[in-house]
Every structure is written in C-alpha cells, then in structure tokens.
Length: 325
Image (cartoon, rainbow, N blue to C red; front, side):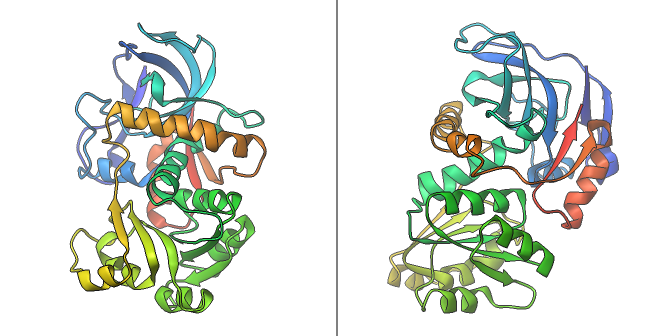
C-alpha cells in the first residue's frame, strides 16, 4: 500500500507518499481501507520530530480516519467486512489501510457522507472526554473555548450549545468570530485586540467561566485561572503557548478551582474505548439529528498532505482540513 512517511523530521516537504508494507489486523483489531483522514496539530508536531507515536502504533501520521472494514482480526465481534466506519487512531491515518482496535471504531452517522465522517473522531472524542467527562460542563454554565474556529473549537461550540451551556470563544479575526457565532457562540472575543479575562468577566457579571478548554498551555495559565468562576474547571489539551509557567496556588484555592491536563493519543486502549463508547451514546444522536456536524475547511488528496499541513500552519482555516483517497 501507500502511506505518508517521514524519513527526516522537518517542514511539510518531509511528508512523502511512498510504498510501505500492508498492515495486518491483529487480536481485537479490524483492518480499515481508508477513504479519508484529517490533519491535526499533533501531526504537525510529529512531522517536526516533537511527538513520536506511542510504542507499538503505526509510525505514519493521522489520528483519525474514515473508510470501510476490509478484514476482521481474531476476537472481534459486532463488525463485518464492508461496514462504513470512522475511527480514533494512535497513528496511521495517512495511509491506504490501517489496523484499528475494535473499541476505537464508530459507525458513520446516518446522513453523513463517508469522507466528512473522517473529521469527527479525534475532535469529538477530545471535546467530549475533556469538557463533559472530566470537567463536567452542565446546562446553564459558561464554557470558554480558546481557538474557537479550530476543529476542536467548532466542535466544542456545537456540543456545549446542544446541552444548554453558554459559549464564549477566542479567535484572531472578525471573520473567524463570525463563523463561531454562526455555530452558536454567544460571547465573541478577538484575542488580538481584547483581554479575554476582562471580556468573560464583563459578559458573566463578574462571575467568570465555569469551564475553560485551553490549547495554549503556559502562555495562558495565569489568565485562565483569573478567568475562572468559583468552582471553575480548566482543561488543558494543548501547549501551543509553551510548557512551563508559574501559578499562584492561592488564586486557585480561593476559587476552589481545578486544573486538568490530558492527552488522548497515549491513553490505554481501555480508556480510549470508554471514551468512544460514550461518544457513540451521547454525541452520535446529535450528529444524526444534525445538531452537531463537522466543519470542513478544505479537502486535499492524501498525496498532497504537505499542502494541507501548510494550511493548518497558516492558521487561516476554520474547522478541519481533510485528506482523501
């Protein structure tokens, strides 16, 4: 088969479409013939040599895919050859075929085409596990989403609105904020021109955000804590703003607040399967009903993955960038 390989870490040109051995479905796995994959920030880090795949997983980039089941491994039940699926991956989505643990498979939702379904697994599992399973966002609470126009952000807006929460977002342009508003965002903050702490306080009568979904890490840590409401929860899922920062624990203590930091890719199979099962139960009905849908910015042939990476690096996109076969 063909796959995108990284012979030497570097820029987008390091991505090479080449012949590689076919994967085989092992115990508890299925073999998926890939129709599409999606580009995530983790793929960019892997290409640059900063985010190696977990031991034993595929060496190729790609944390999600959609396609059709081509073979069933030993110990798998409930799936059949030919089923249309999308899948959460530890790697390997940038390829014609990928072996997937059966617990990380989802059926393509009714009414959604096979290619578009590739935009769902990573973002939906990330948002549901962090915002709802860990941070426990409830109806009537306020969620602040940093990077509201990203794949994660556009998903978080829709899911939070679907459960009756109020949503604030940060983004870097009027156009991106307008797209967030179209998806249901209530409070729009241009981080280039406005202080999100002041804006969220003003919009909530001084209370602050009950939950913050953060992709920046160190750069926003102090201000995120300042923006939290009493009993607020800060969920850190990215480190685009650095790894290390000082934190005034007194400020956290005074608010009885909590900070969590999670990575989806390196979790044990059992934890991933539990998240996928929760997504199928709680999110898939919303997708089928058209209340939560992926936002797709652009679609590239997989052999042109380098161009797709350049789009993501430019941060001009809204939603997901897909790769198709």
